[in-house]
Structure formats: C-alpha cells, structure tokens
Image (cartoon, helix red, strand yellow):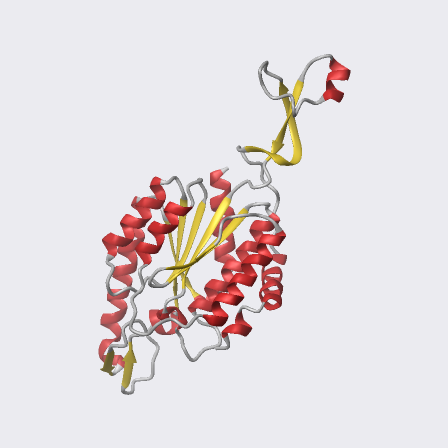
Length: 302
C-alpha cells in the first residue's frame, strides 16, 4: 500500500465529497446558543446584561429592548479516534485494509460534520497517542487535518512487536476534550497487554465526561469473521507481536468462529450497559453505516 498516495490531500477531499454527496444533511438547531452565525430569535433584555446584542431596530419599532439569540456555529463536537497499530494494516496484501477504511470513514465524517457546521477533531494512536487535533468546524481546519494526516502517514511506520494501548489512548483523549461531545472510535480491538476491563474503564471515563461514544469494531468479513481460507497449511503471523502459528484452517474454523462471536456479543452487551454504541463493521460494507450512526447519535443529542 502506498501510504503517501492514500492520504494525499486531493484524493481524500474528493473521496469525502463523493461519499457525502448523496447524503441529505438538513441543519439541526442546537439547544446551545453562541454568537457566531445566523440570527435565530429574540428574547427580552434583562437589566444588567451586556447591551452588545440589543436589536436597536426592533427597539425603534416597539419601544422595548430585545436581544438577539444566535445559533451556535458549532452545534456539536466530534472527535474521531483512529487505531493505527500494525494489525490495522490487515489484510496486508489488499489495497484497502482496516486502516484505509478508518481514514476514509473519518474524512467522510469530517465532510458531513462540516456541512452540519459541527466541529471535528482527529486522534491517532498505537502504543501512545500519536496525533491529536482540537475540534473546529472551519474549511481551513478541514484542510489542516488533511495535511496532518498526509504528513503523519507519509512518515509513520508502526514499530514491530509493539502493543496497542487502546485504553491508555482513550483515557488521554477523555482528558483532552473536556467539553461534551461525540467520540467515534475506529479500532479492531487487537491488544495483547490490555484486557476487556481496561477497555471498559476507558469507555467509562469518556462517559463520565458526558461524551456520547460510538465504537466501530473494524474487521475483514472474509478472513477475520468467516475465516474463509483454503484448507492448506498456513503460517499465521500476529501483526502486533510477530508470534507465528502453523495451522490448517479446517481444524480451527468452527472453534474460531464460535469464540469470535462469543467475544463480540459479550463486548456489545457490556458497552450497552455503559450506553456506548458498539458497532461491528466489516470493511467490505462501505461507509453508510458510519454516517448514519453519526446522524442518529447527533439527533439524540440535540
């Protein structure tokens, strides 16, 4: 995979616009009020308030003081958190893998967020938080994020035999985004040193900060879910640790699928207990589910 081509500014921008083009994105009014965009309504002026936003034209017509209320430019803040560990480069021999899917999904979300006048930031992690941008909503910020992605993936080579610290990254993100918003996590959840308890504690931290959280569990349906391999000898290599396993697929397939399904079901239930959306998402299925989840979650937050 040519990583520099993958995140080239023009390619990302074009793809994001193509993905979002068919989406109808009506503007939703926010219950939060700011002072930066369009006029929404009036309210009676209260003595002692700043006179900055008094509507003097309306005063001339009614002889009463009213102030303008405004729709806030940023109705919602969304932080996209992407796992860029070695296992996310699977399938290694395919043009599109879990990481490319996550990046394409994130930039498509950015385009949709921009059209909604919502703010967006991005965080990348592996064995630590590698990149973190603040959430803003301007086209300039969108170009800045594209440039940061291009720069990061043009230079970044994940270290071999290094672990993925998902929980550590989520805890750090929770500390860096104190204002309430939406956090969308793209990960395959492969980590050899952290367990389920660590992950749930990190999600609890985000929820304690009053964030709405969506975890997109990315996987390859053909290989990681269905285990559709020819029944011949393979040497499977753990992309995180380098550990090797010699095997014949048919000897492990039924057991593997059963354990996989059991693990995912357990995670989904535990995330549900925290009011976290856990969304298994095959990279073969496209980006509509990601965009739809954002719109549904957004609607529930307003």
